[in-house]
Image (cartoon, rainbow, N blue to C red; front, top):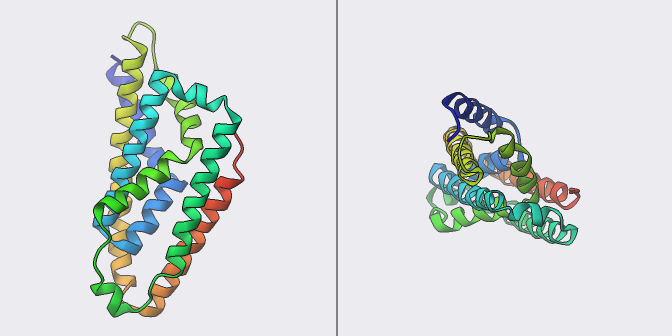
Length: 208
């Protein structure tokens, strides 16, 4: 297994990456601000489930095969872009009545978990990131490569839970106060819609 120093360095870097601006933590930020802390954590868990799939793909060598196929990359990125566009439409047309939003039933946990999972799994850039990032810390003589990759995947997921969890708490706290005003709620819905729309365009234009 990797040394303690290597594992600590990898975890610290993964934690830093978790707090760095990116599509996943921005997605968590907007979902938590709009739907609350519980929904935000469900989205985070969904994203981590997607990371489990990516870790397994890299460890088994499937990601390299997938990354070599332009057709698969194009299909996946357009699927992800279409899903983000759908979420943008939903957010843009969400109700802006402060009384309704305060007493409206919360989004179902499984629904929010699925959002995070689909968001992560349909982002082909994650595959390329894992292919480039994880193998750098694998050391010969430290055990089977597949086990080392799984270990680093686990550490990355743990760092994601910590960093995204903190983002969720902050965004939910702020969103709870903002949603007490119908005007602010409407602005938050519009902002969420524009952010998701922008992410959809960016993903659709992404190149391998």
